[in-house]
Image 1 (cartoon, rainbow, N blue to C red):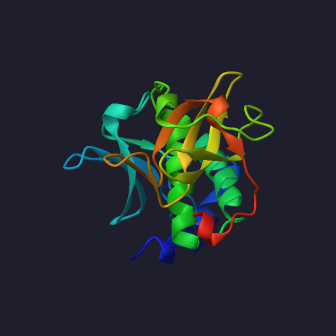
Image 2 (image 1 turned 45 degrees about the vertical axis):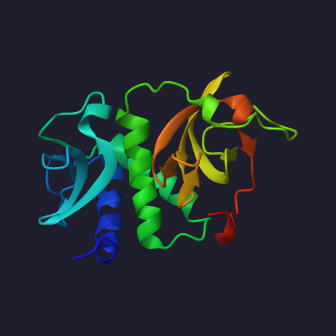
Length: 201
């Protein structure tokens, strides 16, 4: 079973989540989502159903407030996921790509340890409106290449962002891949249009 083939089941699970049914118990449809650890890769996975695990980009060492063995996919997790999933519906991503980004954005927002700013990797923004971003905005960061990021969290100085583009070439020897999260100062961020084109990603 693939991630794509489970999407209809996942939608059902969110109906029950919004009705207050916790994912530490099976609902009437038999849906039971939970965060689990792949000890071979040390990465956190989302168990969608028996034998169906989705691996996130995050290692357990990168997370706070995470049970090493497993923990339920909570109602707050579900709420954030649904917000991110709606956000990615305005992009050229297919169902599986949107699902992947939304799950990685959810775990980054909920459980990621505080990040050190890596603004030195990027050029200062030069367009009007720099530094004026809010959670959920699409932004551009420029290094060797430009790439599109989504703002996960922000304050008056810095923002946590997740890479939406397939990859971002930072230098000859450094690449950031889709789904990875970092913190940068807001003067590096250039807001961009919400309806992204395929060639931007």
